[in-house]
Image (cartoon, rainbow, N blue to C red; front, side, top):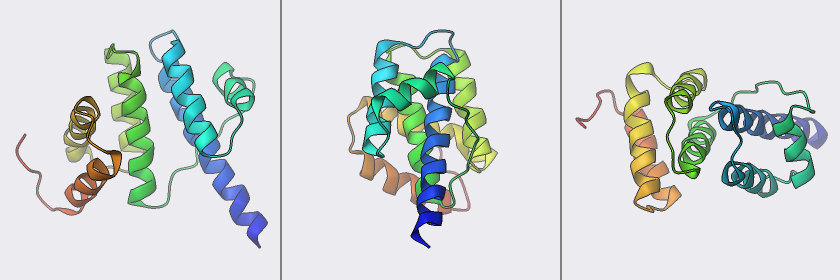
Length: 148
């Protein structure tokens, strides 16, 4: 029984790493800081650096596996936005990719810009991830968008 859940979790992690790899490649160059970031996310989730490199280089097939709840969805979009900021250059292609991924992850179209702005500003201001997450999850539950 546990094997099934472990396989599902491994698929989610691999899908997330594939999304991060796609974002890193969006500007045509995988920067060293982006690679280190993806490796850190991989290691945090039990994936070796060599396997992460294979994923980034396209040697490992990837299938998108969407998260099942708001908390997991937030973690994925947070990592995408955080990595977009990692090299210090926010490329429009990367921004568009994050927006598309946020919508594919199931975030409402009317909230994506606000959510990405909240994450970006929080990362730039060194706000703890959990605080950004708590504030963002409460934002997701509210029926009306706050003013920027």
